[in-house]
Image (cartoon, rainbow over all chains, first blue to last red):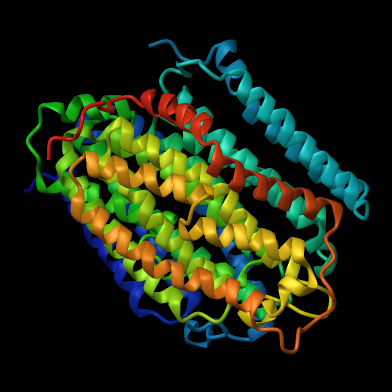
Length: 102
Length: 490
């Protein structure tokens, strides 16, 4: 049986982070992009907890609590902003965000 | 290590506590007296003034408080004064704007003050979590402020873009921070510097530097992370744009210097190279894109990107003199950039948005005082003597030459020459074109007049007598831990 070490979790975190970044870059729906960003933040959390185990102190886990709190606050602010946008444009597609151009 | 903070720690964050309390009082007043704009403005300004006094009372101290979470040193004090001054000027120029747009003043001032609290923590934090919470306090307030014109599609779009890219950059920054924590086992900058001192440079560390650099690059709007800036600057309410381009940029530079100079001196070669490239392309792209703009706010956005490039020269130099020159430039930039945006704000009247270049037609004839102020700001932004912008540029470029960064200075000087074209184009519009002036005449209210007066005075006085700012900046830069007074070895 293979032992699962913190190193495995950092690989998982890197994979999750990459999926998040790709999601932000290729998706056109604002809500889905926002979900991809949450995925990136969760990748950060996994990384922090894994490293906390590895370096044997709890600072990383304290960091995670702050990241979760900020992600929640960001969701509240972000969804409000997206709602205000939707009220005016009746769409959440970023291709429709074209009021301002070079 | 015993847990908890001492009473002394709370004494040293008195300015932040005062500002937070003032902001909360404002929020309550906005429910009790929502229509009394004058009262709300007075409370906001008083709060900022009291906080400024409290900050100044700590001048000259060099303490590390809260078990190494925060620094009360000259560097932090310098940046706190810069962000508080920019908050004060922003609040002053907001008063008439809010009236014209019919916006609620209480919540608006509350958000401005909240953003300022975040900026103050960004300039004094010595620890990654503290810095990141400060950054988010600031960013979250700005997401809401950028979309404050709710029925306006441009403002909505600005808020959505700023929010999405801000959150994206936060993810990248945090991932870099988590890698740093993994490599060193601590989030304190001093601890990170200590742990890295003997270590071999590894791929993970380089990745961490790149990701933290990219995350900060978004906040200072350095190319190639600048895509959000022109749209957000154009769409957001003009005073918010002003605060975003001065306060947010200054605080982000403070955080960047803290992380890289104090936390990562061991990786100096890596991040110097990275910022060299960023500085060169940021100046060039910002200035060239600004040449063709017909919207004044968008032009100033690109000009602000170009200025981030000049400021990065100070980071590349990274010595005491380089950082001091950067602080001088930020102090100068504060007045000229806020002043230019104050004029764009004054151009907004009930019958015209007034942010197009052609709206400036014949401004000198119609309102000579406003025209003269704009002339000062444009000359200063272009770095033409006898204005403050010239002094700032001279110092910055001088520091870079001393450190042997000749090529970077050559690029910067060529860029300054390019930038003179579009700054002087604004003057041409004001002076020469006189046909069809649009909109009702410009009237400056008392608040706007004071804001403009401070900006003009700052721009001219620092151009003629810059010594005071120089010596302040020099002693502030010297308090940054891990900074070398010698010329960098490369």
